[in-house]
Length: 48
Image (cartoon, rainbow, N blue to C red; front, top):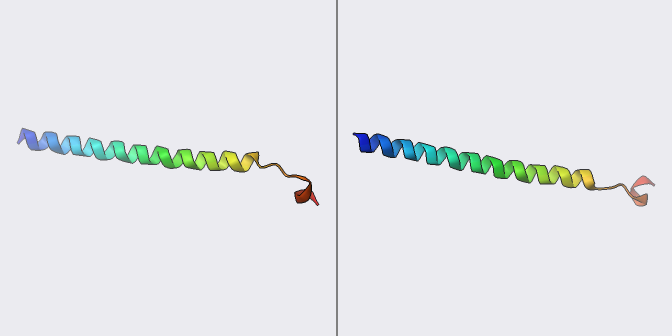
């Protein structure tokens, strides 16, 4: 009984850690895209 509970708790913690890591990865990609769009400067051709 205790081994089953321990395995279930470890499995749930592993799923939680994987979800957090995937979320951080997507937020990092989103942040890099936003910062890339901010750094695009409008040159002479875009103004005319």
